[in-house]
Image (tube, rainbow, N blue to C red):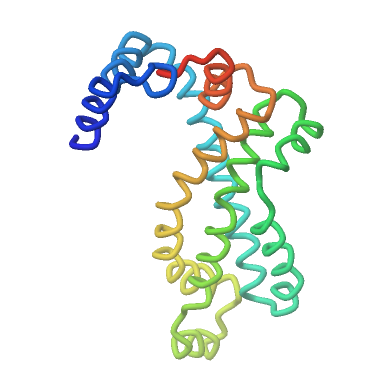
Amino acid sequence: AVFFVVWELYVRIADVRPLTLPLPSDVLRHVVENLDFYWENGLVTFQEAFIGFWLAFGAAVVVATAMAHSRFVERATMPVIVLVQSTPVAVLVPVFLLWFGFSPWPKILTAALFAWIPFVANALTGLRSIDPETEELMRSVDASRWEIFWKLRFPSSLPYLFSAGRICVGLALVGAVIGEFYGGSTEGRGYQLRSAQSRLVVDQ
């Protein structure tokens, strides 16, 4: 509240041009007057982020499970994870656009890619953070790998996955917006952001 009050006073006292820095009250008024506009476009972005979030979660659990059960898979997969982590995801959006055209999938995959790395890292840590004595006990009664996974490894990984999920919700939304910004969209918050930028609608 203090931040926005100072912003409002500064713009009014310093007589800053609206194109340079709009008043917070003008921004709020613009949002209130165009609630349907923001709701419709926000819903599109939310849907893309929602699907991307769960896609990242599912893919991360599968990859982390394979890595947790096989050192060979871990050694083969880790360079790919490092490569993905060090690549600016925005540069992949045009590639997704070439593959999937002007569909929601480029935005969904961008959202998923943003959220995938934290999910994989936390899932792998969680799947390996089991009590070795409990694992040894389960093996001694001839428990299968599936039983050990479902009754021991997966439950132990849940706190790590929930922790990653809190971060990945925001990352998926960021990914969806960036995907819309570069991905040839005609709706969504990222597209409207680019459109407002080109038309100098600063309060939007």
